[in-house]
Amino acid sequence: MGKENSTRQIWLVFWLLLIVTAIEVILGIIKPAFMVERRLIGVTLLNHTFIILTIVKAYYIVYSFMHLGSEKKNLKWSILLPVWVLIPYLLFILLTEAFYQHEMYY
Image (cartoon, rainbow, N blue to C red; front, side, top):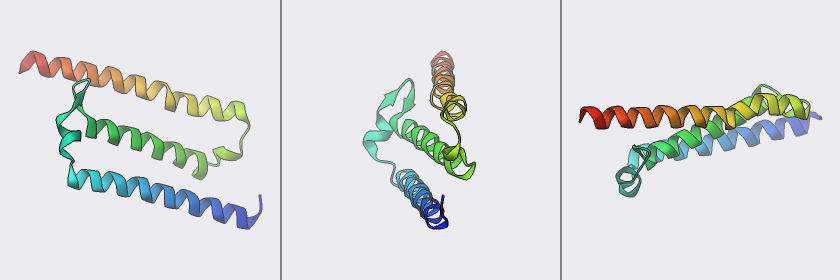
C-alpha cells in the first residue's frame, strides 16, 4: 500500500469517526422527543441509537488503527464476528434484565 493510499484511508476514517461522533453529540444535546418517548426492550430509541453508533465506531477503530484491514479474511472474521454477534447479544440480555428489574421495583 502506497503512502498516498494510506494517508487517504486515515483521513477517510478520521472524517467518518468525526461525523459519527458529531451525530452522537448532537443527538445527546437535542434529544428528539420521538426518540426519547419510544421504548424498545425497556430502553429508549435514543439509547439504542447510541449503542449502534458506538459499535460502528469500534468497528472502524479496530479495522483501521489496529491494521485489521490488511489481514487475511479468516483473521478478520475471528475478531469482528464477536463484535457484530456477541456484543449485541450481551447488550440484549443486559437491557432485558435491567427492564425486568425496573418493572419489579417500580
